[in-house]
Image 1: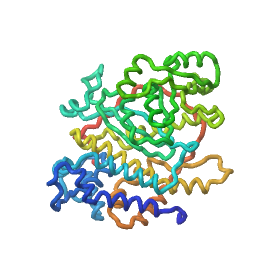
Image 2: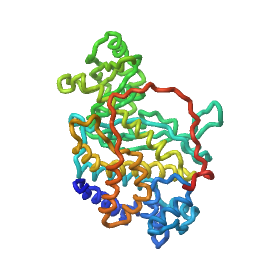
Image 3: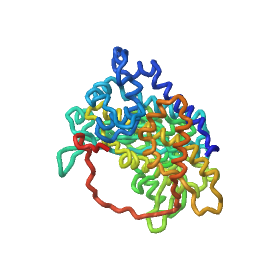
Image 4: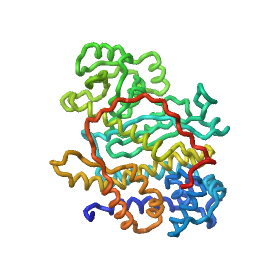
Length: 438
């Protein structure tokens, strides 16, 4: 255990704590200049730490448990009412969590070695929908999804750009329901770099969208529908493994390109066929044209890496209950969403040194590689995250966390394939007045 470096994680935690308590950070993200100028039971840093502590239960239970941990008490402490908390949270803006997340990403990228794929930062872009509390203001802001069996349901569109190899959400965005997912993806534009490779699912391919990606000096690999382009259809029918073709803008893509100031120049792309026994062939379209540097054999595993963002959304919804919002206002929805994105990223970073040591200690005669159980790691961070931000030297605390992570690993079983079962499940609805107390 002594071999696992704690200094990097301790430095990260202290770096984030300094930001949270800094007057410049507080002034940027309080909603009025007169707020947080006097001593209160819920100052700005305390509110931030409370909101990143994976809130899922009733507010009063969460508050009492929070102050129990903060004060090292044996029993919950009823120090702040939920009404006082609601009034206090209205004084901070959700941008505090997005900025905090960017500080975390920058620190990790600048102070550690990041995993890459053939020199590229491997990023997946994907979106999901989130069910929201049914209030007039929420419906007005986010819009609704038509429902054949019930009244229209308030929904939001979430999108993120996700580093699949390092398990980090580089940037996330929450928007009204009826925004196109490709336009949502463009909100991530300032967070991509020339050394990035984007992996995209079937909902994204379009000439204008590829033109935008290439204009950012970024590469892409996307799954495409057989009926999307005539060039793709002919390639699919030819039975070839790969082919370089040229795609031209459609009428709709021309309009989009002109609207966004994108070039209309035809784009040369490479089509790659991925054959899976017992399943329909998958066709990928990529800007990686060099067949020697990026041979056909690389692409099956490359596209499979996209599954990381699907697992990330599953963790958000089923483990963190991201739709289980702690408030009914528009701002509280944004706060909860971005706070949990930050907390997931912090968890991913804290398990990195332990996972690196597990990888290093593995012998060649082991039948499987092992990975830390991420769900268990999230549960370990509940309330512990409070102490991490409270203590000036969290080294011993991190050591105890690392011991827990190290003991809870699971085997990685490659090439497992289970047929997808199309089962309609009753979606769980979270009611504020019926939240669990424990």
